[in-house]
Image 1 (tube, rainbow, N blue to C red):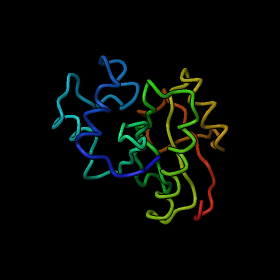
Image 2 (image 1 turned 45 degrees about the horizontal axis):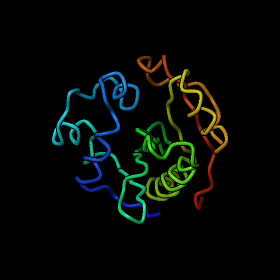
Image 3 (image 1 turned 90 degrees about the horizontal axis):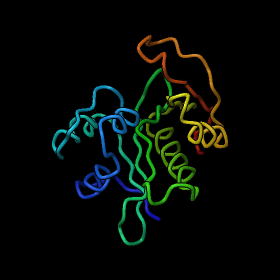
Image 4 (image 1 turned 135 degrees about the horizontal axis):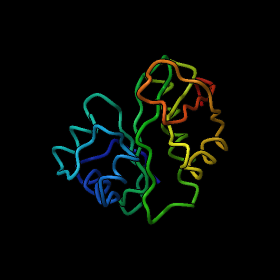
Amino acid sequence: MEAIEPTDSHILQLMTWFNNSWELQRWAGPNFRYPFDLPSFKEDLRVNEQRCLALLSPQGELLAFGQYYLRSECCHLARLAVSPMHRGKGLVNTLLSELCKRGLQSLQVQQCSLFVYPDNLSAIKAYERFGFKQTQYFDDDSLQETLYMRKDCLSDE
C-alpha cells in the first residue's frame, strides 16, 4: 500500500463513492455542491488549502482518502473515507495513522481531532479503537449536531 497526495485520477475515483446529496453531505459537510464535476469537487474539497492523502493499492486503485489541517491547535482530520469495496478490512487504521503522522509533523502540534456524526457508530468505534476520545467543542455552534473527538499524540507517531 502506498500513501500519496491524490491526483485528479484518484479524485475521480473518490467521486464515485457518493451516489447522492445525502451521502456527500454526511461525508463532506453542508458546503459541498451536488451534483458535482471534477472542478467543483476539487474546489469544495479545498485541495489548495487542506493537505490530502490517498491510500493506493499496488495496482493504483484508491482505497482510502482523508485530509488534515490546523484547527483549534490540533491536527484536524477531515473527509475520511474508505472505498465502499474495501470497508471492514482495517484500512481506516492505516489512513488515520498516516494522516496523524504527517499532520503532527507538518503542523507541529501534539493532538489530533475530528468530527463525526453520532449515528455513524462504525466510525466512532474505529476512532475510539485508534485512541480518539469524545470531548466538548466550543469554537463553533454550527457543529452541534456532530461529536468532537481528540487524541493526544506523540510527535513521532
